[in-house]
Length: 158
Image (cartoon, rainbow, N blue to C red; front, side, top):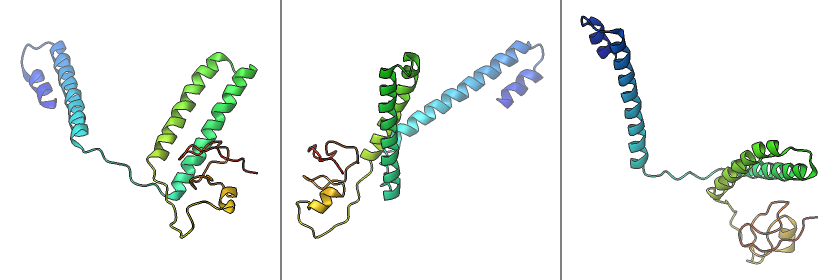
């Protein structure tokens, strides 16, 4: 671009509009080249799978998911009670839903790290009371009614 600008400035009998048009064309060509470069790089890079997330990160993601879902429930309740206007609900609800979906996708891509034990396949009563599914032994959320792994109905945690 600098070279093209210098040529236009040095040449005699050129109009300033020519300098502006040439500079705009060079800048536009640069943006097109950048877009093509990124597109080709995206196609050629073999989709990198996200690595496993540590237990602490998984717990943080689960906590954030629970807070976002609770916020969405409260927002819907407030709308039903007339505390939130339709315009406010339309502005806030999609953002909360998008965040919840993003967190759920992060949890799907995160493997559950379970400690290997010599325990029998059927979970014990102590394990059910500690917040695990009685059918498959998967850890459960405190407010869950169904298992996220096998879909079995869960008993309420006291």
